[in-house]
Image (cartoon, rainbow, N blue to C red; front, side, top):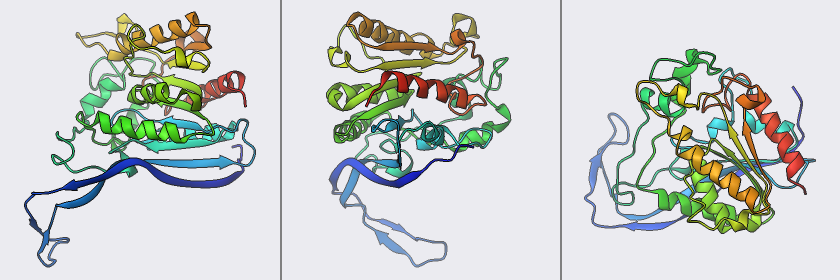
Length: 323
């Protein structure tokens, strides 16, 4: 395994604000079994809406801009840290390819913490079931049934489920505000690598902070950005790469189930790709099956050929993103 020379590694929180809660009833509880009864006051000033960012800097990066890895819905930055079979994940692979890396946990995910509900969040958290993750990650035509030729290790599905966290449907504005502040803070430049729902927030933040963006990789993005309603001219000078795996055609729609990415999300991203080309921009559509790479699901950064895909993306960055 290729060694890397790291000169700094750390983390910080960005976004969020102080929120005051008033009028909630005290809660009688015990902090540990058999401990003394205490009265917890849920009122007061709290921090809410912050997101966590971990950074790793190399001694000699190929470009000065970090690749900022942004996870999707129900996930955390752990998505980029390891593969299913225990190898280092894309975070380390990109470091091996010479790129500085940021790995973030979006608002209410992982180390970013939750906000109180319903005082701050109006709704309840939604937890990810085995069946929901199976179809969302395009692991098979229906829960428990894998696609033939899939590179996902189904014997490790229990382990895969352990890393997923609750999500809210009522806090998108708070999540977006943190991403906006994160992207605005990257004055030295950033390369965006966003997966699934992460693409939705990333494109919105990139529209507002295009001057900081040196490249954008949309990895099976769930963004439904409409180029006929949104002016994307600020993207003209930003290189774009769209990456898609396998099992996306009509032939994979079984028992009436249609994965949204095959029809709505992918269609929106194709429209963006074509609009960028029409504007004279630099945009690449990378369909892995068209390159002869088959069997990848929505979890392609974790599967047995994940390094091959990571290296393809790194090669694209080296060719299209210049210091």
